[in-house]
Length: 80
Image 1 (tube, rainbow, N blue to C red):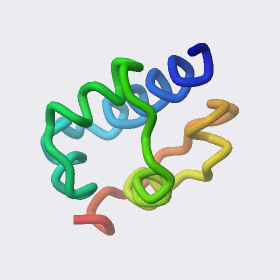
Image 2 (image 1 turned 45 degrees about the horizontal axis):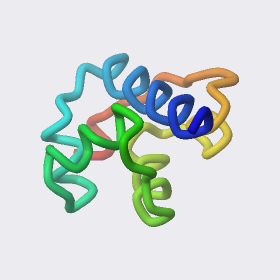
Image 3 (image 1 turned 45 degrees about the vertical axis):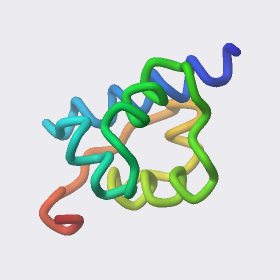
Image 4 (image 1 turned 180 degrees about the horizontal axis):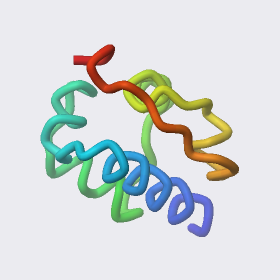
């Protein structure tokens, strides 16, 4: 499960850098906050559709989500 741990920690870092709550991200994904928490904690894998939405929410590439090469900053106002 190392890949999941890497993805989960990258998602958490992206969310925290933007000052977002898990509840907000979960609502944007159309899932429960508990489900999203499990993704960030590495207990669940995000579905492809969620990864695509997360890419848009955080304004990063999928590579940034998977590999954390360079986590970009974004203007969250464009997502809300």
